[in-house]
Every structure is written in C-alpha cells, then in structure tokens.
Length: 432
Image (cartoon, rainbow, N blue to C red; front, side):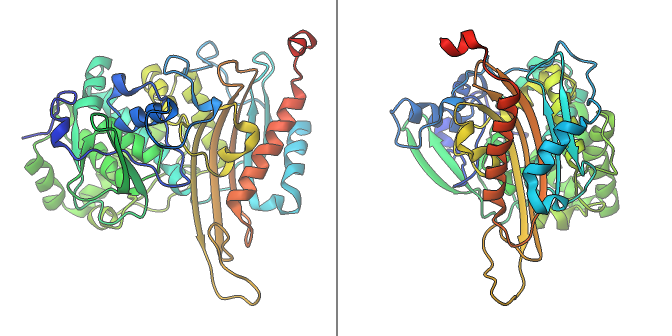
C-alpha cells in the first residue's frame, strides 16, 4: 500500500529525522513545525529558546512564517532591467584581478521604483553543484500543481506523504539532523536506507543540509508524480516495479519531462540552466541522465525574480519555495558574512573542486587547482523584518588555488556595504 501518514499519529514508530551538515544552512522559519510537521524546525526553535542544547540563530534568522513572504507580488510584470554600466563597474571592481573567473548578477530592489541591475559574464555556464537542487524543488512543486490544483491537497501531500529511503540513496557524506519533539533528543548522522519522513522534511533536508540522498529520493518522487499523475502516490511495490522494469531509454525520457519541462514552462532557457542527472550514483545508474548539468548567474537571477513575484509555478508554490530557502541555522560561505547577521538570507550554495599534484601547492577543501567551482544563490532583506535593503546576488566562480568559501564570504561583505552605501539611512531614522 502507499504510504500516507496522518500528521504524527505514528511519530513514535518512525525514525526521527532532522538533518544538518556542519557548515550547511538549514532553512524554513523556526515557527513552522505546526504547519509543516518538519521536526528539525521545532528543534531549532527550542534551541533558540534555550530549551535544547544547540546553536542559537542570529537575529536575521528569526522571522516568523508570516513574515517570510513574497516581496514583488505588486510588480508581476517586472523583468530584469537593462544592465546598469556604472553599477556593473562597481561590482566588477570588487572581483579584482580574477574577475574573468566569475559570473555574477546583482539586482538591487531597495528602491522599488528604480531597480538596478549589474551583470558580469552573466551567461557564463558551469556545473553549479547543489544549487541545482533548486531545480529539483521546482520540479516537485510543478508536478504537484499539475496533478493537485487544490492547495489544501498539496499541503496534505507535503505533510502526510511518507517517503522511505531506498537503494536510490546508497551512501551520502552529508549528515542530517534527527530531532524527536517528544523526547527532545537531537542527533546527527547521514540518511540511511529505511529512514522515513514526509515530503516536507525531505525538501527541508535537500535545501538545508543539502543532502544528496534527500535530493535523490525527491527526484525519484517527482518522476513518480509525473508518471502516475492523480493516482500518485503509487503503492510501494508498483513504484519499485516501475523503476526496475521500465527500459532505461524511457526512464531518461521521463527524466527530461520531469526536470526540463518545468524550466521551459517557467520561462528558462535550457541552453543556460538544467539539472541533467541524479544526485546519487545509484540514481544515475537506474536513470541515465540526458547530458550535462549547469546554470548561469543570469538564469539563477530569473529564478529569484520569478519566485519573489509569485510566478514560479504559482503564487502558493513560490511562497513555499522561498520559505524553504530561508536560512535558519548555520550560515556558510556567502551567507556567513558577519555583515548579514541581522539580515534575512534566502540561500543555496553548491561546490565542486578537484586537485592534482603541483609543486608548492597543498590541496584543501574548496581550494582546487584543477577546478574550484563555488556557486551562491542569495536573496537579502536587511534588516530582517524591515527590508530597508532588498537585493539578490547570483555568484558563480572558478578561481583556482583560492579558498572559494572564504572568497564568497568576503564578496558578500563588500557587496552588502556597496548597496548599503547607495541607500543611506534617512537622517530622521538615523537619529532614532
């Protein structure tokens, strides 16, 4: 039979999962447990209240669910503005002598009547690693909207559809957070075969600790939604037979329909953005991907803009997606900049690096000399709850032999100060 769980009636029987990779940035507003059943969120709320031993959140991570909302609903026709040459020069200057190893797009919406757009190598393509999980999330929400137009039914699926991790995950080095709201016990470990959780929780794990295992299971789930339509979810044995018995060529075609069509339907260009393979080795073996995965700063900026306008799938889906990328735990890389402490940060990051032997060079994490990809998707509202500053930054880099995590953090500081300087606090407000 298919697995639908009534909200936590059987929570004592499930492995209790809350996932968080050290140095990753789990999401969703910390008051969201009652609405979503995401147990990790309740653990974060209790930690911030001092009732559970864990890291407390900065002021920018404490917005309520109601406060995390779409900011451009009143500007549905806004397109990316023409590139502002002066603003672009300022942004390019921040990149220094390695500017041609970056692709960057910055949209400053702090003055809604006069948005500014800077872009340097905005069409530069590279594999954006875990940032591609935003495409997986889009595919899941598009499939739900297509098959279940009623938002209440979509909420029911998110909160009650239980996914059982299977061979699609195999091994994942990303650790995840397990929190039991009844015992208030918090542990961390990788997702394993047999673990169970809802669609909501798998989305949170994929977009927060960036679990590849969670992403693989969600990709499988999105394909099942596409295949079974209104009959989703299928019985467990039917789902297993489908992936085991369907020819690989047909599975690849279904993969394209599941993950490429949502992009084109929402206005993206497949020549500049696509997720073309599973995030697990087993997934890739079971469902061969149709090519390379990549994105550009410009297409990622379109994703952020459409989301803020409520145009990514629909308004309801856009709102849920924004809440899922709201950083409410450890901030890393771009999001870890100290100047963003009181800012609400909506964030996804991804990296890929590799090394070879080289005299006088020591390979390190995020410091490759063959490739050193670092990618950041960031929307900033500062200060949180006030939105005096509102801007988006999409940053792609491949600067060899340089700690790219620190590099993105430094650029976050410089960009924030640049935008802050362009929008000085009025004298009256400063006096207060």
